[in-house]
Image (cartoon, rainbow, N blue to C red; front, top):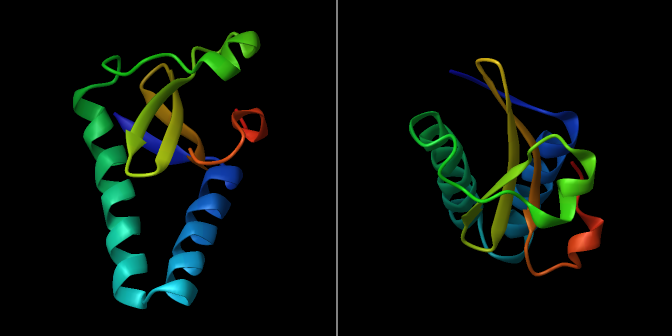
Length: 99
């Protein structure tokens, strides 16, 4: 199963990395990014294991969510492809989430 990232998901992952690089260290930033990427790679084994994302149900695209640390990884499945649509800091207002 192929994994792809939307521009939004890529941008948010970069923002997360840059934030921790500036407030903590490159090592911490790399560790958090590695954990997020690892969780996403594991999706290929557990596609439907995770819950549907309540805040995105209105889109009718069956978005699901995976939690890794403080981050909610939003994805959907189309044919043989996992599309990561957002990587969202779960400490924020959920209405800011992108699908």
